[in-house]
Length: 332
Image (tube, rainbow, N blue to C red; front, side, top):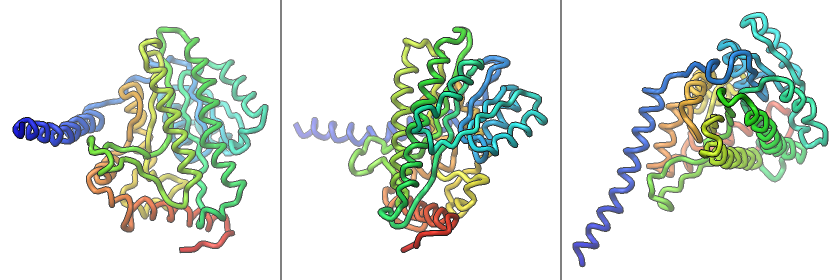
């Protein structure tokens, strides 16, 4: 009997090691083996990529990089999208259209009509759900109500509605061509190698409660759609990629340079495009973020304490946002 118990304990102890080995192999394959596909051939020459929040940051980079690969681009966001579109037309010789939208107003009844008309008219092949409203406040209970509502609207309504509209378009395209949805969500869940409660595998940043909750919606909404549209029913026609960034430093997020486990926006977008069509479901497009996840898996307090923990990162973002706003009292 004791010998049987010993074998059971041995097998239970072996499971996390096997899980770690599998995760290591996945990591090596994704970052050392995977190379970018011929995306234009895969999704169709002359087709269009729609990008939300394309007026700056990673949205602007996605627009430029898809245009460089020969795609026409539909830029959806603030007025600055017109400047991005002009630069893309001149530099890459592709078509670029703009739909000016303030996504914080996506609750309005007719908000999506113009976007839906554009989706219907164009040969849309890829949707990049990029837009977000990163607003934090210290203390959270003092956050202006309009900020909370705008964050929720940007992080939930927009992704849900645009995904529905785009996928409706994709299922009606030529069966020989593939389509794709890229979800830019957040680093919320990481492997805990089967150790369950002893190593909790979720991470969240303090002082960003509404933003983090919106990210959670985006992540699980994306995963639900991935499970549905990657099923055999759709015969692999739609690539579904749920990208989970941590700290990404771009033109609008320079404050995150203080976070050592950050990725550069340019490299992050390049890696995302390398994953497109090669990787399905959830994926982290940064080696640095994967290392951070591994540390969080093995040392749970890594994300709970210390100068580079998630709470301190949240405080950094919230403090910077409040300074930019020029109002509110920042407390320790």
